[in-house]
Length: 118
Image 1 (tube, helix red, strand yellow):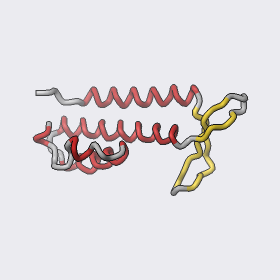
Image 2 (cartoon, helix red, strand yellow; image 1 turned 180 degrees about the horizontal axis):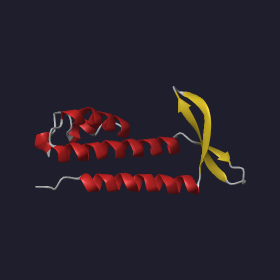
Image 3 (cartoon, one colour; image 1 turned 120 degrees about the horizontal axis):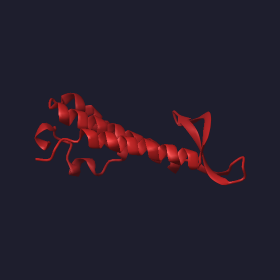
């Protein structure tokens, strides 16, 4: 697969970057990849990385709060242009279950498109 990738997509180049930045770099390279299985794989990978980054950011940037049922939960304010957009949500068991499903679906997509190792 490395023969079909452009420069800059090596471990040494990508390792210092955050998850979303790696996804951006992969996404930018996808149109340049002519090998269809590799292109499909990179597409699934960058989408999975964006999903993981979004979930991570929601948890990391949430604040502790008391939920309406009295339990201690994380509360996340949706941020647009570094400002709270008014939409807030709880990081609760239901949210975590949905996040796990999203990640599992992303992993499935990556595994389905992974080219064979030769």
